Image 1 (tube, rainbow, N blue to C red):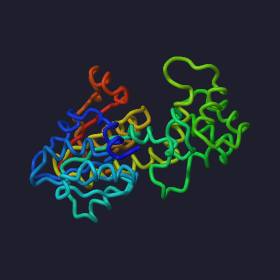
Image 2 (tube, rainbow, N blue to C red):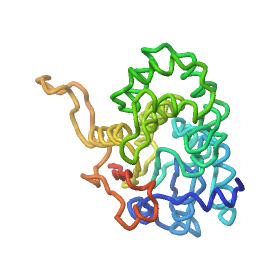
Image 3 (tube, helix red, strand yellow):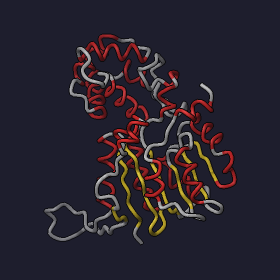
Image 4 (cartoon, one colour):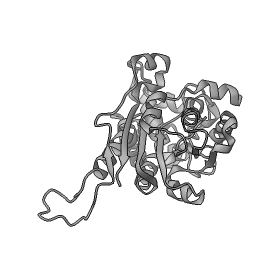
Length: 312
């Protein structure tokens, strides 16, 4: 697949609402922690030029190449870094990019990652069981599927995929080893869970669980969110788009926690934590896409956007 074709496939989710939530303004600095092919970034840049700057981060080197192509006209206003957003604060410091006025996370997979069969993210096309965001990562989905013990495999599928048939799926996987391709794994999961029901393929949750485990997605998200407080300027905005309940729960709990003063356990008679609020929650309820956007871009149907603002 060519870069041009890949870029055209991906449609940024909640684009207008994201730019609005960031309050993108000319002359200010913004960080896109999940740069992808640059869809959100280009819309942000249009709002912050001529003197604004955008720092884009992505762990996927293929995404970096696509973003560089898409953002070529903004070369003087962008810094593009191939790294994991878990290193957010270090990246900002090394690039003299502090404080910032807005930080965006658009979590999950892009359409282009799903479309490239060699990446192993999708069972719509046959490919190797890879699922790494970056080729420098050691652990692959094949390693987990073929080497992890049954109890650990079941735990991953249950915890990260919220799959009720996790034990049965893990048992069938163990019996079917070695498993080398995405379609082979999808077939094993389908046998384990019985016939297909509804629109969702029975392997969907298992594939999501493996991808999350391979890339340590939830741990990296929690790590990065903590760093946003140190990076944001007063009244700077934190905007996060999530696509499943595990991500959204982490984001919601982080924003609520950082909006409170005391966070001691309820039974503690006197505050001992010394915690002070660092964020103000702007979106009490998540912002979701319109029916029109969902019709135009089915990937957006599960998206939830949350917004918080840095306190002084």
